[in-house]
Image (cartoon, rainbow, N blue to C red; front, side, top):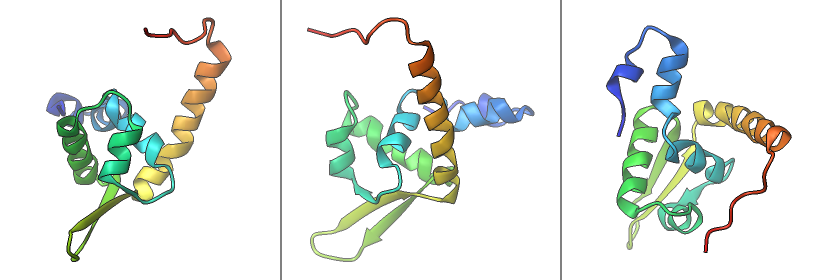
Amino acid sequence: MRDDKFCNSNCPFTRAIGTIGNKWKPIIINVMGTRTIRFGQLDAIVPHISRKVLTEQLKELEQDGILERLAYKELPPRVEYRLSERGLAFLPILESIKEWQAKFEIFSPVEHN
């Protein structure tokens, strides 16, 4: 899912979009916020994402240093995720995007039947 042409660009903005620019990553980061969360919780909260895509996105976010994966050596195994310092630094940017949307939103969200 990652676009290496974007991630390897000379332009910092293009590289940033390559890191967080698909539709799922900002949603996952927003849902996680400042809490530690398990895969099943994310799967239940993030709308319309398959478990396969969620797994892929979490791996990429971990590789990019945006989140940390915490694996506990227990039976049954337990894995939790939390945002890294880099991921936490992205939260105010998401808040600005939400404020921008609210300010310029002309129509109410479309309801799907």
